[in-house]
Length: 148
Image (cartoon, rainbow, N blue to C red; front, side):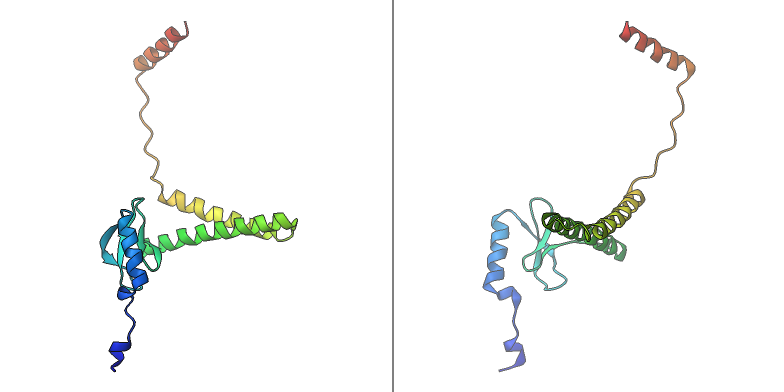
């Protein structure tokens, strides 16, 4: 038998086919893109997430920069989850010695997230010109009428 004949093809695995069928039955849409790891088709769920039937959630990116951004976001999410679970465990045991270290790590992660949000948020717009004095007077007169 040739080596080619012994090769496992994940696309023909009954378990994977069953998962793909279930995804489609739940309303997921099969996409043209394939998983970069296994080559299976990707599916877009109703909530917008893109998943591989074998590897789970994947992110479609158009550049190396987008890939880095997604990787950083995912790392921060995982750090937040791990730290909160570990803090809960320590609190349940009444052990606060390690909690300070975890809180410090979480504060650093928060700073990173804040800096990322500032960098990604739109720049503040130029200040709007002040209304002409006549318009300002009308506005104050209208406020006076509402009070009276």
